[in-house]
Image (cartoon, rainbow, N blue to C red; front, side):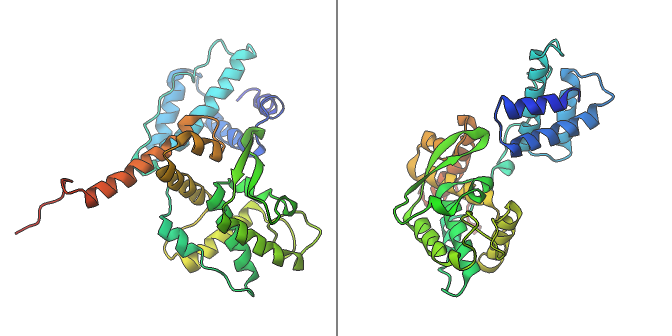
Length: 293
């Protein structure tokens, strides 16, 4: 697409978007450019492109990302005088279906994930603290990876996080997570005293995003057979369980660092599923399949 480099510079310097967000936009727009290279850019052409992605199996959430990338790019083009109008303004996508809702763990599965590791299991103590912190705060992978050792001390009950788009927020840390982190900190100095990172590798270096993902996957293979574990499942579980307990969607929005309430509202679908399941199982007038006699 024309002027893509200039647009990415605009996202970085004027919109102050996070590098990971900019890379996502770059990837999506490059993909669109390859498919639309010989096509006159119109609303119909862009809608056909999204329809094709849907036919290929992309879920509504992914299609939303594509639409947002196109809409933002052509809005910028219009502002710059390169395009008379924004052809992506009225693009439509399928509604979020039950199949595209984020996967979550049950509270019982969370408990299975978090047995107390032995004093000699240094990696177990580290991974235990990582999982406790993910589930206690709903942090994104990049946010947790960026944490530093000095941010935590015995009395720490909350953290100031700089999230997507350099937007700050406060996350609160419960007793379980704080205890797990302090236990890890008591072991951490034996490995590396110079690196400021809270979570480090066996080489004493800050854990990369990929290293954290692999650590969770290995941990789940041992403690939660049959379930694939990644940071976003813990983030989704945090949000879903908190919303079920508090019914405060605005509070959950703030804790997750969502700029739009509509992003958080997907968890109300999960909550309704939970309530529906309870109703079907317990209410005396709930519809049940008749027994064959």
